[in-house]
Length: 69
Image (cartoon, rainbow, N blue to C red; front, side, top):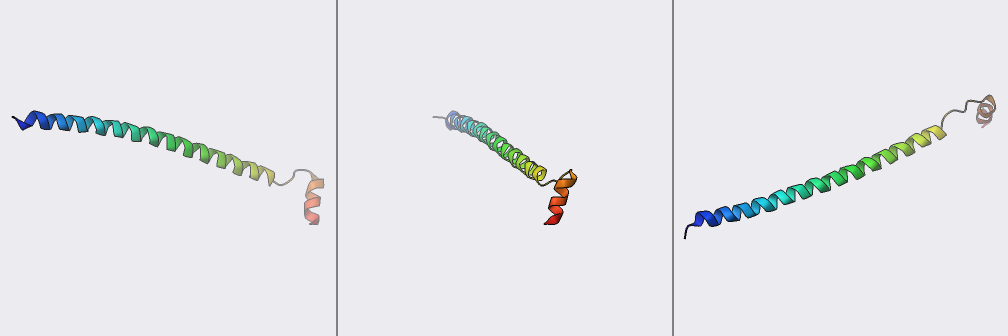
């Protein structure tokens, strides 16, 4: 019995397993990156919203009220 065909069969099997694992890791990585990107965008929007709320008022009355404190 020749070991060459058996070894080639084993290598081919493991190669297929490895390529499936690589594609699964890439798919998971894409999902993680997308969720982190969404998380970053929502955090950025919240920061912008807070900055808008903290902006200096444009009317003289509201400015004078702030200056009294």
